[in-house]
Image (cartoon, rainbow, N blue to C red):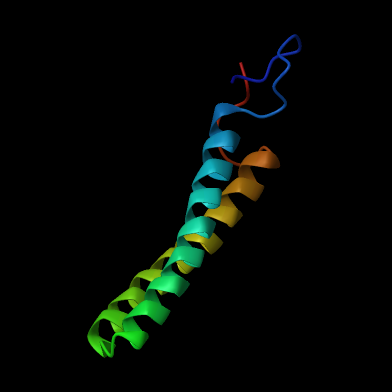
Amino acid sequence: MKEQASDPHPLSDLAYDWITLMQNKAQALLAYDQYIKDAEAASSPECAAFFRKVHDADKAQLAEAKQHLVAVMQGKMGSPTK
């Protein structure tokens, strides 16, 4: 989806990729919340701790991805559209 004057897509491929990554990370965070509850219900603190660790890592990556998306949308990151 390269953004061009005649292109109906308002986003560059790179911006779209960041948005898609962010959506996937956000959905994963919701799933991890459920996994943590399931592990706690199963009396498995080790599993709950691991799911929290994965949750925290994805949450940090989501925050970083947001910064990258902002930079891409502002034209500060990536090459100009062709």
